[in-house]
Image 1: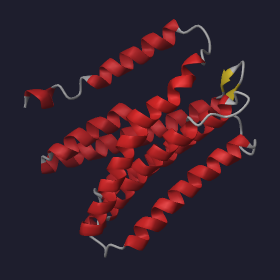
Image 2: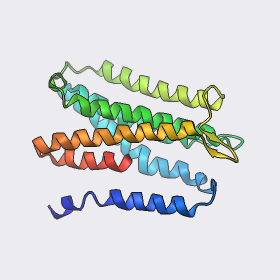
Image 3: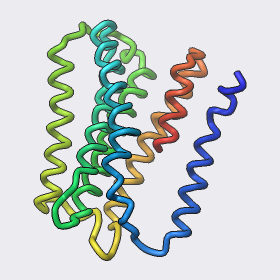
Image 4: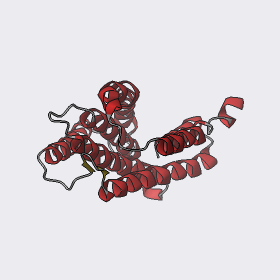
Length: 212
């Protein structure tokens, strides 16, 4: 119980650190990007891939579309973390920025859909699980993110980051959309947790708020 009461504490701590770092930074400092592939693999991709695998197995047992959407969101986040941090020749930071924020928005949309699906009456009806549905859904997510990454690399999408200048307004818009999606999903899961008193829902909602 004591640990659960303090579970919200990392959220304001993270927000405070982000504000301090933002105020202390005088301009775009891109030297840390060399460590990004390692950080994204260890702290984002691997945990999200594990969560996606568990969600897929749970869906095959219970047949809940909400679980399938949840797994799709975590898979999208894992693939985004890997693709966005992949080194691009010539120091093209726009490719990683575009992939990261569009991929985060896609992951947020699946996560929000999963949380919304549990709120509506028809969302609690279970369908007949199918391995083909899992494979096709995962393939569609990965293909969509790969297409975003390739389109950004070949200049087929508007710029999210301009070398020597910094992030564009479109990048800020994508950040806002993804943040609102994860925030809304967190609130919906918290609302559901108040009725079901589930430890999983409690920690899951806090995790979504931390991402937002």
